[in-house]
Length: 420
Image (cartoon, rainbow, N blue to C red; front, side):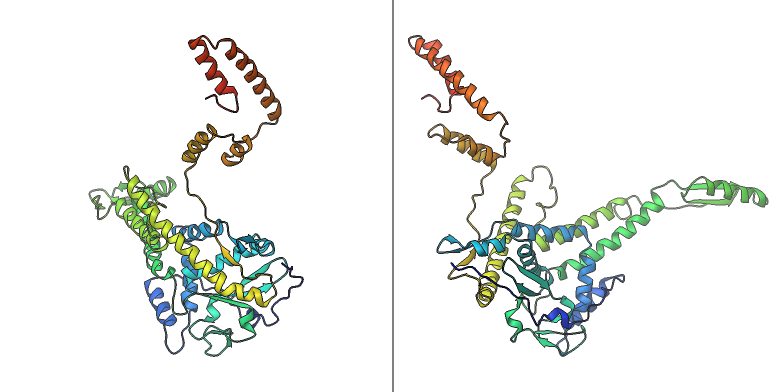
């Protein structure tokens, strides 16, 4: 196929038409979440600014960000090819192997979690450079990019020339999976704050000092002494009086309640993003069969993600490649079929095959990642010489069944082709 010689940048790049503002990092709570939903779902003027600023803050949560990264990496680390009549199209595959194309895949997949991705593309000879349009300025319901998030009028990216330079991904009405995870991240943050306060109050011993109620000098010295002893809480009271700090060590007031709430929130987050919990959290003993079921659920989600990204690449990106002169022909993006066999099972299969037909040493080195010794040729030569010596001994002991059996075992060890 002919190679593409030239490329050009988008002369009407949408990102130049918006005013980028700093993300609001104020304290968030459940009311913040609900208000953001109302603004995003407004029929008169849908505005996702509050929602996406909330998402940006929520993504600081470790469990949520790692769960999303887990799903995205399962796609970006899977081999992707562009083929035409079962033959690789080298120019397109070279594009796929670039960091920019990996970023494009990430931005496409992020639409699952954020609800929508509008991506500006620059088509260059050796790469396709994606630029994500700030989601706060995109109104998917109206097909507009606005200068300020609150504007009701803007630039339609659904009309030429922008249709030749943008990739719109996701359902315009969808607000993404992060929406459901927000409440659990907010609950978990509040829980951690209460947990830290609990540790501060009850994690260190409480100190009590008493003094003669009529001796003010003694009281001041006692306060000074306790203050200099460290940061643990203390009280100073007159003799004859008492102070009591009731503590509930049952389920309702102990450390366990905070841990259980955190675990519950993490489980909900994992279920929302990856469909289950056991591939991200260690299960109880004896939970192997349950873990296998959870792995099957995860694999089904990843298969659905692969189908989703192939639809976007073949139905939306491919027509853009044709417009910009890339030699795509009748080709398509595909994920090559891959065998999902455990390494120990594959090793057993390979050893059984090696007993029937010759298998090169290089195959085992490459398949199992075993480092090849620097003096490989010398070792190979010595092994062959030892094998030749043993074979001659086998010929001399052919009439002795016991000796011959022992010699055969040595031949099998030193020879590339086991005796039969």
